[in-house]
Image 1: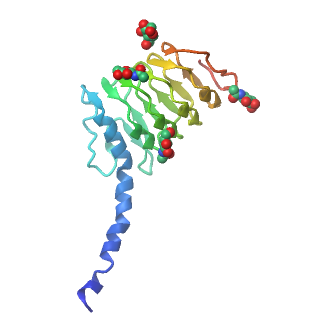
Image 2 (image 1 turned 90 degrees about the horizontal axis):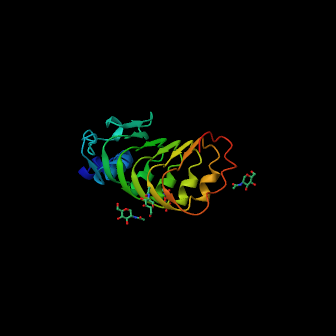
Image 3 (image 1 turned 30 degrees about the vertical axis):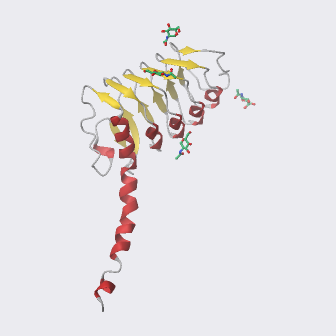
Length: 191
Ligand SMILES: *[C@@H]1O[C@H](CO)[C@@H](O)[C@H](O)[C@H]1NC(C)=O
Ligand SMILES: *[C@@H]1O[C@H](CO)[C@@H](O)[C@H](O)[C@H]1NC(C)=O
Ligand SMILES: *[C@@H]1O[C@H](CO)[C@@H](O)[C@H](O)[C@H]1NC(C)=O
Ligand SMILES: *[C@@H]1O[C@H](CO)[C@@H](O)[C@H](O)[C@H]1NC(C)=O
C-alpha cells in the first residue's frame, strides 16, 4: 500500500477537531477584546489568560456546565475604558455586572443580542450616548439598572415591551423627551 493511503484520514481528523477549538475560544476572545478596551488599574483581570481553552477559570467569570459564560461580575472593580460590541457574542450570558466603575462611551447595539440576559447593571459609570433600541430584545431581562450615567436622548419605547422587568433604574441621566408608558410592565417593583 503506498504511504499516502495509510495516513489519508489525518487531515480529516484535524479538520474535525478545528471547530471545537474555535468555538471554545469564541467567548474567551470576546472577553479578551473587552479587556483590551479597559484600563485595569487594580489588576482585577490578571487571571484573564486568552491562551486557555476557555475563560471558565478566569476570576469574575462564571460558566455553565457546557463551559459557556453565564456571568461577568465586575462591579466596583476600578475599571475605566469602554464596552465593546464583542460582548454581544456571549450568547448564554445571564448577568452582566459592571456597575460602579468609570466606564465611558456608548452601549453597543450588539448587547441587544444577549437574549439570555436576566440582569444588566451598568449604573454609576460615565456612559453616554443614547440607550439602544435593541435592548428591547432582551426579553428575559428582570433587572435593568442604568442610573447615574450621562445618557441622552429618548428612553426607547422598546423597553416597555420587556414584560418580566422587575427593576428599571434610569434616574440621574440626561434623557430628553417623554418617557414611554411602562404601564404594561406588570412585574415592575421599582422604577
Ligand atoms: C448582533 O447585533 C447586531 C446589531 O444589533 C446585528 O447586526 C447582528 O446580526 C447580531 N449578531 C448575532 C450573531 O445575532
Ligand atoms: C461620549 O463621551 C466621549 C468622551 O468620554 C466623547 O468623546 C463622545 O463624543 C461622547 N459621545 C456622545 C454620543 O455624547
Ligand atoms: C446634563 O446636562 C447638563 C446641561 O447640559 C449638564 O450640566 C449636566 O452635567 C449633565 N448631567 C449629566 C448626568 O450628564
Ligand atoms: C400593552 O399590552 C396590551 C395588551 O397586551 C397591548 O395591546 C398594548 O399594545 C401594549 N402596550 C405597549 C405600550 O406595549
